[in-house]
Image (tube, rainbow, N blue to C red; front, side, top):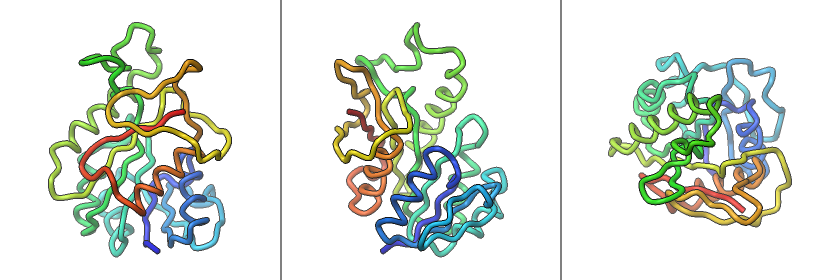
Length: 203
């Protein structure tokens, strides 16, 4: 199994990814600013780290097979995170993305729709900028994984749909649980299908 560094391991999404990695037998370095908030799970080592400290972060990432980052875009910087992964010498980098940059029609992003909530706009705009930065990166095997519009705690069903740049929705709306998202992310880690591209998930 892989040695994975998970940045943001104590968050809503990060904690589900951590459990999925642990359950599948991966060896995980779980990174958060407050490691006491990281769940104690088999094969997981909780360490203190900060996305705003690229030198310190690079030291924690070194020696891993892959890095997964699950941190808010509005409180982190793409160049610092990407730089830390590069400095650590890790090629595989998976980013927990956002839904705002997904297309709802040709040339029309979700975040540009008139009913997109203003309070979501800073995070969504920062996420779209992060994706734009990644698209210029050719020396890392990166993947940007966007959830559906409604991203929430829920069941681990194992039943979902995957796509590329278009928002996935049904007659019930656009949604995905943290738990099912974590399944698909670890699937991508184990069997890469989306190197240097974005993909998405929804019911």
